[in-house]
Amino acid sequence: MPEDAVNDLVYFRVDQKDKQHIGNEMSFSADISNQLDDGSLASDFYVINPVDINANKPLSVSLRLKRSAGAFESAQIYKLSNDYTVMTKLNAEVSGEQVKFSTRQGGTYVAKYEKNYSVLIGVLVGVTLLAVVIASVAIFLFKNPKYLQRIRYTAYKAKQSTQSEI
Image 1 (cartoon, rainbow, N blue to C red):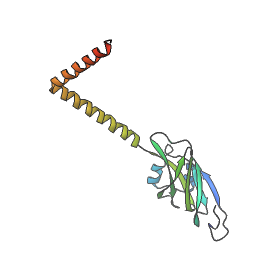
Image 2 (image 1 turned 45 degrees about the horizontal axis):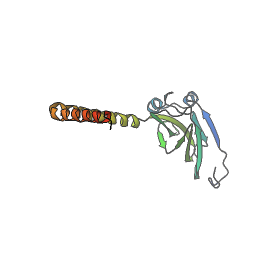
Image 3 (image 1 turned 120 degrees about the vertical axis):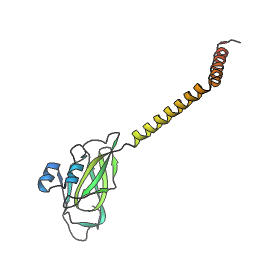
Image 4 (image 1 turned 135 degrees about the horizontal axis):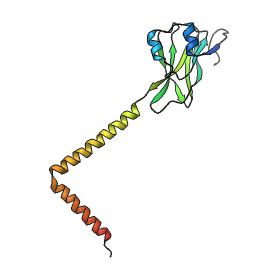
């Protein structure tokens, strides 16, 4: 914790809890419970006590992920409201199996995997464009056979010129 982060002497405690323990202590809203299924949780819940602290300077927090994010997913940090009804996305830096973020508040934090389809969309767009170009060339050559004959003649002459000796 940085110097002068709080005005008075405050004892901090960080508790690590799994979804079952958090669920026993507080009931999630239906929306939050659906967003936090076991497959999407990237870490346990971390509770920074006291939850009502508001520091003058940001506290640097590092969480360990359960596993590295896959090819089509990314890890994001969320702060849950004290009544577990609202999740707020925080800016975080992900490196391997570690997530680092800064906060000025206590409370409950969790890392969650989110699907990221940008790579897949890029590949699909590229393949689609390639298919359109190939189809366009095929249709053009089918409707204009003289160009296809010219290409065949040029290829034949190129083959003959590479086989001849000087």
